[in-house]
Image (tube, rainbow, N blue to C red; front, side, top):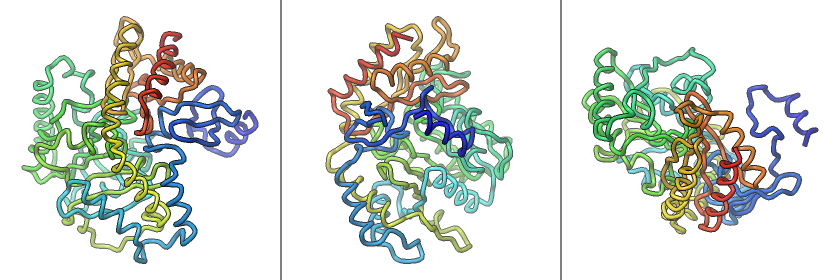
Length: 426
């Protein structure tokens, strides 16, 4: 492993982050488990950053990939592509957006990039509203709208970004308010901000902030925002890269917790739909999607192999009601973790919904973020046989728990027990 780590450092960027003091090489997986190169088995509560959505080595997906690869792997969007059309039909229907059109990309970053292009072209403006503590990708444009300093390496941007309150419920100037008062204050902040700007193209928001530590506003906040935006013709982009496909349990899309005023104008997705294959995309009303007046294609977006994987994975997810499983098993897991957290002084909050759970760590007796504790728990969990992630706002002090949606009750209990030992040890 030391040899591979040395080779990694010799040819890859210094900023390409690796977890653990002794970085882990994962060689194979099955179900909710993966194995390291030394043969150690781990229960996977992170799924390659919320990407292995159904299960590792899911037979239905691997079979679809193998069969499609045996026919043709690549053609580009210059030719008709049956798997792409079939997946687009299903995604358009599931999106809830009327008269929807779907454009496939290779990642969530590229999906958000495409959404920003569409919104700014449609509105004739480069002003974007984004949420504080947000994360939208690693490209030049998406970095510039990311409201999280730890993931935004430059202030240079093709866009003018204005940040809005509301993505973080339990910190910030409105944290002390009730949910209704919090929403009212955030809407007032939005109204005030719009009084000082020129025409704005769009608001982009994650219904649950992923990299930001699985934070979210009260249900209905983005519906209230939409009322304000709609009066001015401003578009709403819902970044569903991490919240889509039923992960939150209560809803198939995160925006549906804010659906009182209707669906978003654009919706972006990626990660879980491919179960590890490289799929992203944007869904938009036809009026918005078709606004571009120049030619465009995608060389790799909509690849026959990735589309076959997406179709098989989506079919499995729907037929096995994995959204319902996320709601049931996730509900049990979060209550178990809250009980554990109540006895650990370093745990400030256990939050989330479905199988998207965050544990925020602080210096005991304070609200001061504790990234060292998060790193220590990450290491201790690995030693116990559990893989988790981490994230957070000003400091990376939130443990991110997002297992495949097929997680069983027994596996949830196994993971919770390992986490309890890791938290108490630290």
